Length: 424
Ligand SMILES: NC(=O)c1ccc[n+]([C@@H]2O[C@H](COP(=O)([O-])OP(=O)(O)OC[C@H]3O[C@@H](n4cnc5c(N)ncnc54)[C@H](OP(=O)(O)O)[C@@H]3O)[C@@H](O)[C@H]2O)c1
Image 1 (cartoon, rainbow, N blue to C red):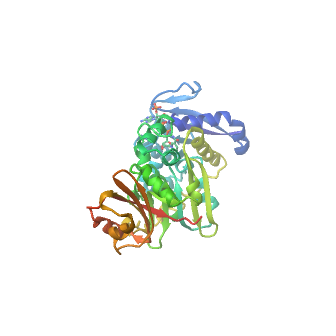
Image 2: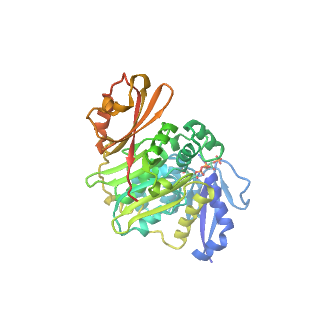
Image 3: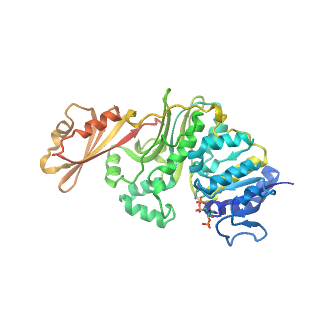
């Protein structure tokens, strides 16, 4: 049987997942690919006990790019430092690459796409977006005959887990985050997850594939979930909504929407029902109509599953596609819409001084006729009233202007979240 010789860079959560799958599922994999996919060398900062001592170990990861025995380098180190250098050297030396590194592809995607083409190479990156969900293959292959009008995605299991737990257990953000860390659903440093950066990396990659636009991480609008309180979730629930951290792409014609923010979604909509650590992508495709995938976005075996599927593709010679679904030179440069131009319904939440307010004419007292308020809800706290308002459709810059000019005698604090309607 023919062989595919792999060099594995990184032996952490995902590296071990890949290693384990190639051992335990070797028979199935060789049956499907007619190839023995074999790890011939590994590289990492430190050696691990689980490694077969017959496999070569390099403490310098770049050595993998120069090992003539290796045909494919699997990069599961992460970040844009040594991982970028390894990927570039591997491509220059005629090796194919499989990676789970969303930060690298989102922040340096165009440069990497050009390098792949220059060296007639290939990068498989199914694992970089939505973990075990085969969303890259779905967009690049299964839905290849479609334009993507819009998609809504839950791309960070940590955030979805935290928001779900806050709602189910009526708890605030900080306590749930600590528990998520203890349970292994959040990293010791969870910053990039909870501030939306990780979701934005994945959105940037998926949006480039969907639009044949150059990947543009810098223009992506990003808000995280750090400021969501249980009261926000409770008020949203009273209106029939859930709060989800959504990655949203929309083709607006002359521009693209590319945003990450916590949004209110009707509880009856399918994407709102994706709870816990699960990821989901709901896409509206021009011919196929609505399409949705749900599955685990993180973990060793789950992410390893996506990496090994890319290795099987290489073994079966299904490795000819362009990185972002078109030649690098043909990728468009459509502008990304400024968030101030965003149009939609808004959920406004305010704390009102109880001694100065009467619920009966509160909407009139706060907003006058400056804005259409469609629904109102109150939560009575000790000395204040917590109010939630759902507006009619508005441009975001109008909402901000209105909120800036509110009667500060009456209102103790104010904030807003956007409302999304997927109609699916
Ligand atoms: N974890 C997930 O569920 C998941 C899901 C989807 C995508 N990803 C992506 O997969 C990649 C790997 O994630 P992970 O969770 O497996 O990370 P991890 O557990 O932190 O493992 C990283 C590995 O890289 C090694 N490493 C780090 N810096 C190095 C350096 N300068 N030289 C040599 N080796 C170095 C580490 O060595 P030591 O063991 O010695 O520290 C470790 O073996 C990242 O791009 C991540 O975004 C992860």
